Image 1 (tube, one colour):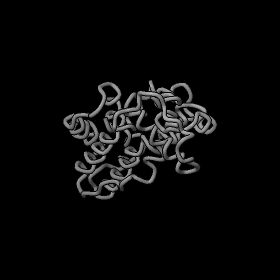
Image 2 (cartoon, rainbow, N blue to C red; image 1 turned 90 degrees about the vertical axis):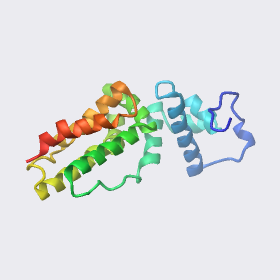
Image 3 (cartoon, helix red, strand yellow; image 1 turned 45 degrees about the horizontal axis):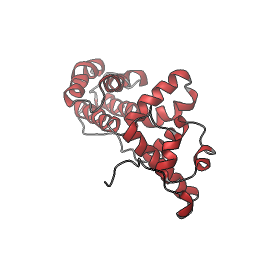
Length: 204
């Protein structure tokens, strides 16, 4: 069936058109993200990416030393430059809900599956994953800073509410629920986080 993962012998990449540069990288990145969605981070291997991309082992292994490196670059390729501006409805509660709902949608895709694996990698060695965790996975925390800063200016939040550590509270709770229970995070959980935790913490 169309869309099912390849389970038979890999196609002979030598019989197809030879891809180089950006075209080859794009095929490898898309294969990586597709494998991530189909089998999860723990079962993703360089060999499965090679098979799905229809390329040679050397094309993958000479560019990336580990699954973590390949996944991080694939995520950057997929998500970098796609971020929408932080919501600005004029109402603090609605902005907070919008930020966490966006984050929940992102966690329900390949980004969330990668987050589980990359967070585990970061426990052993933060340096290789810090960039991706900050620039891709923690984008909602940066949005929270912007939302709370505007709320401070409008008098809807107390001074200091946009301090980065405080702004991360809602995102940390959302991520914890995701890591424990999986996706999607129910909307009533998002509403509870905003109404019972974030708003009492940041309001004047």
